[in-house]
Image 1 (tube, helix red, strand yellow):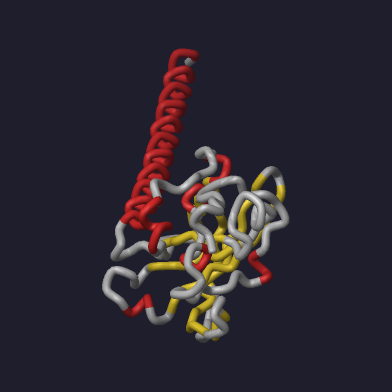
Image 2 (cartoon, helix red, strand yellow):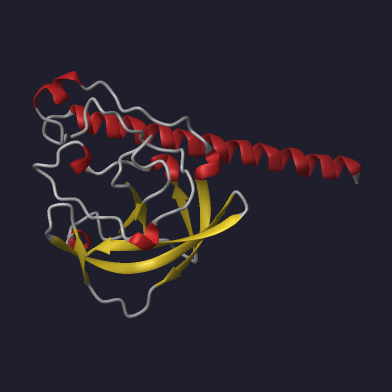
Length: 204
């Protein structure tokens, strides 16, 4: 019986390590893709010398503490809402659902949205949008908050990885871009030390 118990323990530890390795690999891939996007003149929000001098984003150290499995409740009978943006314009979004998770022993809930226009494009039908603010904003990260891209979950759980959070384009170029403003209800009263950090060399 002891040998069987030890075998199960070793298998469990092996599976945990494999899952963690996959999570770290996904985060590293996210960082590479984001850097590649900002280096590409056709995709980057950077202009002029900012684009020329850009090498890579600063990131918080990868921390799987900020990769969370949240309880997900889909919003029923959701109607399109006018989402305010940084330019004073509006974009159509649906409140798609709410995610509740535990971080450092405390429970938090964030509202997740779906961009109405984007959801009609091929490849983005299951795309979800999570804007949030936290206590790093204006210090280690952009003052207007950060975003996370998600996909529609298959059940009542959704993975939120703050290590894959990024700053809106208007953090780097407020003249050419209009970015959704983070709703007040999505303000977290804690520091989320994960994802892209603020770099005042490229921000305007």
